[in-house]
Structures are given as C-alpha cells and as structure tokens.
Image (cartoon, rainbow, N blue to C red; front, side, top):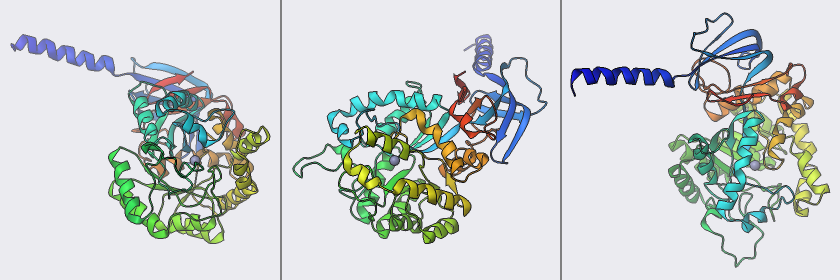
Length: 428
Ligand SMILES: [Zn+2]
C-alpha cells in the first residue's frame, strides 16, 4: 500500500472510532450510592460507550455529549435480582411443572422471550438466573441478549438444576416407565463423583454459576421441603469442583439440615432458607454466607391456590412456610446477616418482583438496606462488585430512575421510569 492510501485509511479509522464512541451525560437530581449508604444531590454521570467514566457535582460536560436530563428524578444503580427463572415460561393459569412436558424446548424458549424484556423494563438490569427445566435454555437466552437478538437484563445463568434423582430440581411425578429427554434430566447426580461430572458438563457448556438443591421443594411433585437432599460430602464435592472453574454455588434449601449442610460445604448463598434455625444463622454469620430469601412470592402462591392454578400438593408443602420465612427474614436482618435480593421470579408474574422491596422493609430492613440487597450486596454475591452494583467510574452504565424518594417510600421502586443497561436506554 502506498503511503498516501495508508494515511487516508488511518484518517478513516480514526473518524470511525470517534463516531462509534458515544458520550452521554446524565444529570441526576438525586443519586443513590448504596456502597456508601448515601444519597447525593445534583450529580452528573459521564458515560462513554457502555461504561461510567466519571461521577460528580461540577463535572465539565464534553461538547459532543448527549444529555439525558433526570434532574427531577432519583437515579439508582440498575437493580439485580439474584433468584430468577426467566428462561422458563410458566403459564398464567397453570403453574404445574408438567406444563414443561406439553411443550418442546424451542416452544418454551420462544414463550420465555417476553419475560426478559418485562424484567429489564421493571428496573432489573442484571439477574442471577438459577435454573431451568429445559437445560441450557438460559445459556441460549443470555447469549441472545448479549448479541442483541432479544432484549433483556444481563444474565448470569446456571444451565440446569443439580439435583438428586427424584429430588427438588428433577422433573417428577411421571409413571416410572416414562423416559425423559436429555435436557430434563441433565442435572441429576447421586454421588460426589456424579456431582463433579455434572458440574464439569455445565462448566463446559458455559454456565456462570452452579445451582444445587439440598432440601426438598415446595413446587415439586412428591417432594418434602422438610427433608434433606444430597449428603454433606456431595455438596462439598459441588463447591470444590465448581471452584476449579471459578464458579460459585448457590443452594436451594428449605429445611434446617439442608440449609446447614450447604453452609458447611461453603456455598455462596442459601436460597429460600425458610426453616433456618439459630445454629444456621450463627453459621451463616460466621462464614459470610448470603441468605437469598424470596419473601414476596408467597402472595402469588396463595393467590394461585385460591384460583386453583397450582397443584394441591404444592399448597400442602407451603403451609406455614410463608410466614415462617418472613419471621426468619426479620431475625436474619436483625442479626446482621448478609442478605441479597432474590424473588424466585416465575412463581409470581415477572413484573411483580419489584414488589419485594416493600415486603423487605415491612419485615425489618431500612429502605437503604433493601436497595443495597439488590445492588451492592447482589454484585458482591455474583463476584462482580468491580463492575456492577453502584454508579462508579469503570463500572457498567446500568442505571434506573424514579420520581420521588425511594428512601422515604420504598414502593416508589415499583414505578421505574427510566432504564439504561450497558449505556443504552431501554425505557424513558
Ligand atoms: Zn427458584
């Protein structure tokens, strides 16, 4: 190539680079900083492409910046839900897992697409999605979102439920001579070595964390939430094997022993945790294990029960667990345990997860603690505190805005008016 052509190419590359760099200045009337537990007024957030570049009161705004004026709003970091099932597609009128058997995997995947957009538009820019019946549908959904094929939050996915045969994460209740397709039994494991094998497959298939189930479940046929599932040895194998791939483990557990075994084995978080006892609380405190308690969705289980949309055995499993979970949530907050925000989205319709904030405040959190559970703490639980959870230079430009002061009235978060994810506005 001659020198002149090289020079032209250089100029073109430079201008192309500049044209592709977008600079946005967001004017925030109030800005919530959950890391510091503080609210600041009249802040400017400078965003370059998908990252936050600077935050402060009297920042010089570059001439090329596009200005988004939220000076009459309260701006918060994008919310994070640590317990969702976006890639499943429950039917509004039928919450029986058998529905999964009436649809192909592809049909389920298409039916789940709206969940992701609804979730993002309600203010959640990131989710930890903790399992699907159709294995790896969540991996595909995460990748489709990242490629811009569909709209949704940034997803961290589990790929499948790691469960004992007939356990809380298995498809159960069929006649014994029915053989399930591969994706409905992908996560079954019945020894420490089988657990390791399943986790090796999941790691190979590109998951971001591992979901195991160490007690029976409410929403599984033939299950007993009071029981223990997996041995301590099996859960330890899960945590150890996952660590080889840099993956963290969360464990579904309702029963006291299921909860304590999971904490002993070193999981990052216990999901649900209804029947956690004093010993379990002390262990969680000592080890810094997060409790991810879905204290809102009982409203939906009871509602669906009244409408006959949920199998009768599920309602029997659920008896008394709802109130117990809320009482233990209050105890855990008082004891100063690490708490993250997880709703089990899918049990309730996807636009209702935001309602859990008010429930958390009703059961003992301050509004700031409830916000921290879904930002600072959630980012820490995910292992991405450097990139998510607050509006700081170097982090992803994930922000939301509301009218009014959510620290005075937390239910304001049920009406998110502005959503930006990765520097791109999705709701305004
Ligand atoms: Zn769940």
